[in-house]
Image 1 (cartoon, rainbow, N blue to C red):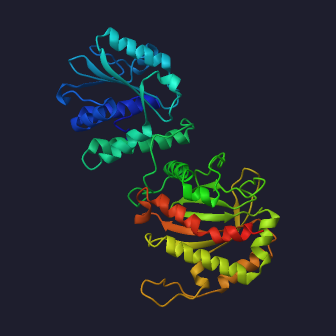
Image 2: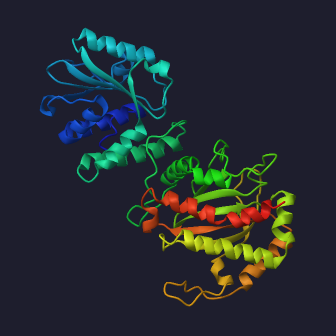
Length: 419
């Protein structure tokens, strides 16, 4: 069924129409919006909300509004006060267009007006000319803050999430974002889907790349990520944050990187050691022998347990995967896949709350043997897995859990970087 907000073809107009509907229907929300972004609010019962038109005129259709350059949203009272909103998604904020809106307001007697531009990214100051600017992400956060009191705020924020997912899939939203990461909430009632998973993945990594604790771990916040995330029919979507070794930078195929994957059943944050790991680092990983390798994995496992105490559903995970690729752009074909809880390698303490994982150290012995005698395209990863639907994923605090899982893997990174 078509969403009630989908009355236009252009994303800018869809967003503005959704916002106009919410403000018109919920007067308390209208008062909050005007006070927040205009700094003052006339008596809300006297305010009129119009879109794609001028006060006193009938609403124009989408094509007419575009060629006439009408403001996207105009909130006014009968005393000649107004808040005029220009909304952008893909197109840049235009100083000429904003000047025309100001001139139109003055011609119509609205000398007391506030001009507001909303866009995914902050434009250059010269484009604004003193006009107030706000990000769509700020509007989204404001809406989420009103969820408990306003059904219209909830509808609008949900619509922004869905619209953003479609725009990302269509390649329309090239820069910036409309929403912020607020958790991963796939459930049987709201099942996993590729566009939403891709949207959440991008938002999560954008915010994680700015964290000081991950910068200390060695991420390159300015490095690119996957150039094209494909696999709409797959069961997971993944991307990475690049780590930078001392000296000459290496790509993600030659140096460990931090991978985040959001799948149908679970989400995983892991340190990935790629098949093409540079020779000095591979030598460091294995040269000290199996005992040193197992000691390192034990430390990582202990760190994961300690760092994720407040995420009891999370489990440590070690993965060894052999793949081949039919051609360059093809999805990898799994030839072998070994996945287990690394706590199987170490005897657990007999204490309250201890893991019920049974001892089976041969899994880790096999891992070292396979890495030592590698003859195939094999990558190795260790981290934490979170079942979708678990409490740890249901808010922005999930980002802390992902970061903590990666930081817990530092001993393995240090082992590869020694000397």
